[in-house]
Length: 402
Ligand SMILES: [Zn+2]
Image (cartoon, rainbow, N blue to C red; front, side, top):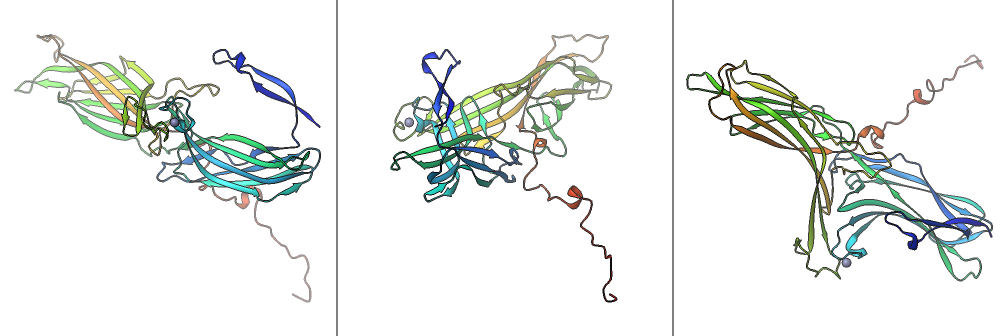
């Protein structure tokens, strides 16, 4: 009998979030499973409506240690799990989880004797691009779980079986391509001021994007056409907000519980997280030499402080998991203005007026697409990739005058 080091979490030593694990020697099972994922990171390219599919492939190994074992069955499954972190009944697994089986592989359906050594079982699946990406948010999460189970006959009594298991999560990302040109939109306000906003709708968790705001109609004229006063920009602020919504139904046992915010049999939860914010006092250029007067504001926006890979991400890319979990993003821009005399030598007689122009612009937060190639769009290798040209046969002798 071989021995191995096993780890056991000890609840008695839990102190806050710190868990103390105990290590001890345990008999190594006669057969165990390992897995190697051979495909590149799973990334869907494009929106769920028109996304490419992504390949998941790898090798499962059954390691038989000392003597042959009989494996009654060997199967693997890939499941999508949508988790509600605010269930109606705390601790109820049925209220918390919605699980969907995406793929089942049956490697061994009948009892099979496996000799000592390593046995390979390849698996692959093309995942539909409409599936939601993995996500972990305060109200809920979306995750993919790959589980392989071999039912092994116990070699001591040959009447009972034990399961050999392997489990891992599969991270799935979505990358929405950046449009070829930035979006332009014009907004008009009651003050007579028009704003032409030009900005990138697709943003990434790292890096910033540029926005240009062109303001005109800033001068207020008298009936004779002479400018009396003009609007002057004082402060510009932008804020990137993440709107998280979960919409889960309770399980059959707890569906009659009264919960605040309940809509029929489902409970709606909402949360807003601010991912980035900035207050600017000098990010513009003004030109009042024209009839209307113009101001051009330039700012950079994005997710503040890219998280370290070891830390929990403080953002969630855009996702909509069948209405259960939804994450969207908007950019709020506010421009505070006040009036001043159009003539520098002639001060404004009355108290200056103030106004705030607010804009809410939808943006899409997504993963950058340069980390992985689309499996379906990847071209097949050509000769130049492996050798210079196709093989060439050169005649070195002629037979019979040919
Ligand atoms: Zn329940």
